[in-house]
Amino acid sequence: RKPSQVPSSLPSLKPSKSPSPSSIPSSIPSNKPTVSIKPSAAPSKAPVGAPTVPVPAPVTPPVASPVAACVDDSLFTFTLVTDATKSVDCAWITKNAKAIATRTSTYCGNGEIKYKGCPSTCDGCGTCADDATFTFELTNQTGKFVNCSWLPKSKNSALRISTYCPTVGSECPQSCGYCA
Image (tube, rainbow, N blue to C red; front, side, top):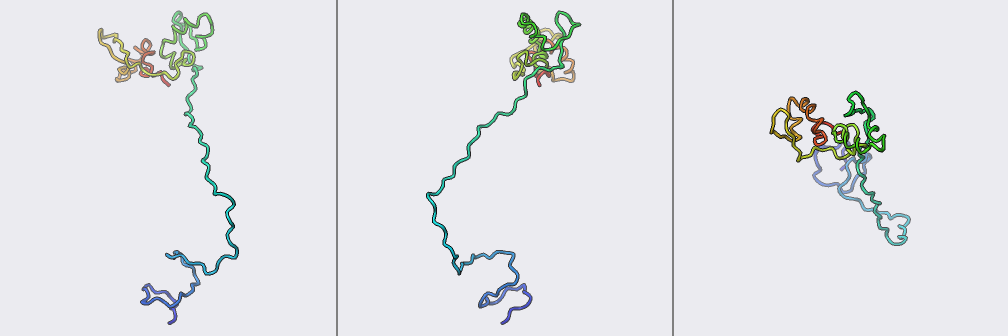
């Protein structure tokens, strides 16, 4: 029998005696590999020495994430305790070598100065967190003590912060909003 000119959608009843060459290659690979009838003209080269062992790539130690630089805010100023009409910047605290200890103890105890404005000068870098054991007495309720987390938990938090943070800000810098 001769093959038909148009393929049918039905399978053959019997397989053909020999495969017929196709003029168009199949888009689907066969499910059985073919065996080469003709060997290659040149044999494979013999191995040259022992097999190589893969060398692992050098391991680079992990690098810490970049940390924000600890610098004083160049625009930050504060008023002097002794003269409320005079404003100074962070550099003023260390400008006079003889007055550094006094100025540091007087001004760096203020949380806003230590953590928000002058963290480098006042050693406030990387340590900005509320003191979990600290409590303070409310000015309008004698005998009532609260902790730092009380400050921002109210519709009146702005009033609470402006009232209490000037005195408790060094113990409650996070609740007072001084942390970067």
